[in-house]
Image (tube, rainbow over all chains, first blue to last red; front, side):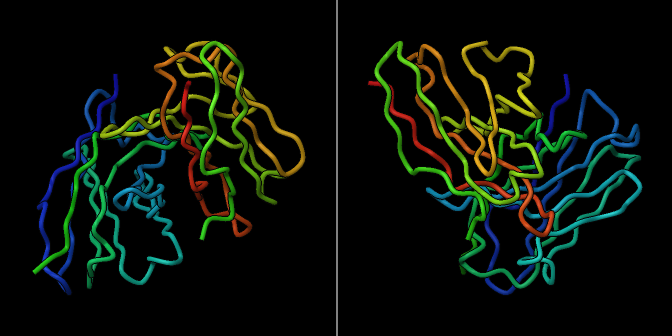
Length: 119
Length: 107
């Protein structure tokens, strides 16, 4: 059973960089065949796709966030990470990591982590 | 704003059938996947591809598509089906995107 777990600070100051890591267990990122994604949900709102990374390191980002987002992968630790720069209160959200399969379905999700942007 | 449109809220009587729809031009080219989200929990995949259910999802959940509309049907809705439902597919540029979500109330 694949499991994903987000970790990182729950509070980030405005203009700083939000950094989160997703640790994958029960399956290897480097086995290929899946895209490893970040998705967020603003309080009381819907889901927003942030971007994904393949085990090879190739990435694809939401155009609306592309200038501020970096997703990286560490296959030796079976982790992938999100960095979102120059954050504002509008970036306050629950951040999920998820696995996307070849049929564009997010079949496994982390539990989510709330990140609040506030001074 | 999302290029996938969902009704904000839908209600169904216990044991009856309900259809939740997702509209968007990209659905003419791509399948939708559907997610159930209960308060305080992560979304759960319930339907993907043409009409596939992950292991553990009851067979009362089914999916279909016609033209620019994808549908999630719950046949014989149960109290535990009360949740928010999101569709996911690609937008006109091929980027992944979610619908705005539908809040399902089981009466």
